[in-house]
Length: 255
Image (cartoon, rainbow, N blue to C red):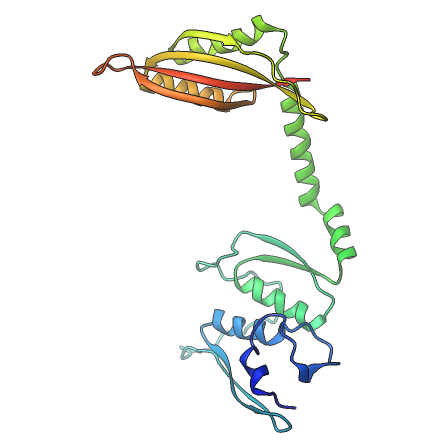
């Protein structure tokens, strides 16, 4: 068929469809994927020449090492494990929907060569069915349910001031710091439709840097979800080892 100069300039761009290819099935990805695959293998795919009505000539180069001894038999199994030498997609599991047989095979080979574990299906309906029925989604949903239950079990009740303050005093004792000041701030009106409320507190904590840092870490990782809105450090004395942490935070509470 051959191509015009304008077509040649954009030939290897993904999704580019030449005017000369009008009416021919395709997505404009064949040459782009072929060149990328050649480059992944250490070679290249280039256009040598093309002219309308005269056809096109391409050159594919792929380096091949000299065989040492007997050449091992290569199994033609598309599902064999991908190489793992520094590949960008290593460790990822991909589900890809593509209705074109050749493009589906090319994508599987290209993504697999980049280290991904690839599963191909023919359309979006099949992809959704695979996602709903597949073990990964069930595991993720179970993890979400578990996290939600853990959050619900550790919500604070805004009016239960004594129990809420006792939470901070327990951390004070465990982390060997001193709570110089602690008080609950004015309530925050929940946003419309919000499932939870934010319960604000202001704290002043003193101790060694290591102990105060441990107290802060305990707040971040403790059973009650905390959002820190302000904090500052200062030394109690210019050359002393005791510091003071001024901290404002919000605990996640039941609405």
